[in-house]
Length: 299
Ligand code: SF4
Ligand code: SF4
Image 1 (cartoon, protein in one colour):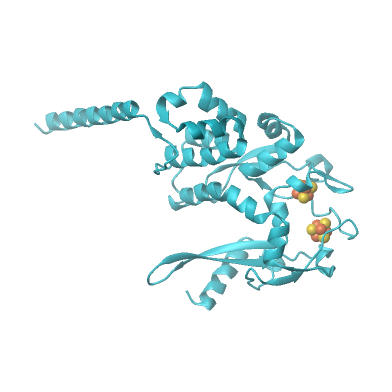
Image 2 (cartoon, rainbow, N blue to C red; image 1 turned 120 degrees about the vertical axis):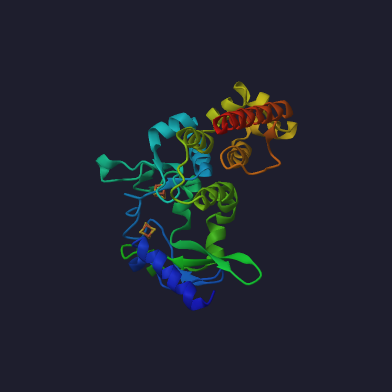
């Protein structure tokens, strides 16, 4: 794809989302430079922490509920609102803003973010946005990744003389760790999107997806206290890891959803042979029944 076409495509995306006016029309690579600093001395301090649309990733939820010493259930009840993402039809948890307090984020105080070292991923990357475009070449398909600056007028951080490159900013914000934790979840989103907007996820699958991606205690209970392990083969080492480690369980959950909802192969989990044989026999029996019925109608 030529650069011109790429830029037209970016322009279209930004226009569609209504954020063109606040986005620098400059594509940055990882060595792209900008100046910025957010600190209690800026006149706008904490002003941006209200009326934000923050979709919590599964890893965000684990970090914040642990920080607050809450169970997932309690965290979701107090701080999250379930929602179906329009673009993908995927159920997600959105951080509830305090409507009765002019849309204030529940974690902001006069001295800043109270959960700063565990803040959600979208609070970390600001003011850097990331985009990727799918490129179709003659010999290969690949994703082109680039960055851009989200420059809002009220943000005085841009007047602060601290120099960054995209890479040094990402390192400061733990972006690589968060990207690696969120990768499996993002892949599930892309998988759903590839089915097209008209393919609805059945209600049962939606409920399962929401539980597995937001509530580690419930998901663990589902694995160890239901008939899950009578149905699926999971190796001993994985079982040991997911018993006490939420992050390992979250990653296993991505594989389980990939397998159970999207029908993709994964080495992490498979149906037990006896269950598989039973399922195949059932399918064959139904097929034979249908064929018999068809033959009788054609007589
Ligand atoms: S989580 Fe922290 S950084 Fe993010 S909006 Fe709330 S107070 Fe601001
Ligand atoms: S508007 Fe910008 S500088 Fe002000 S608090 Fe928010 S991120 Fe920091």
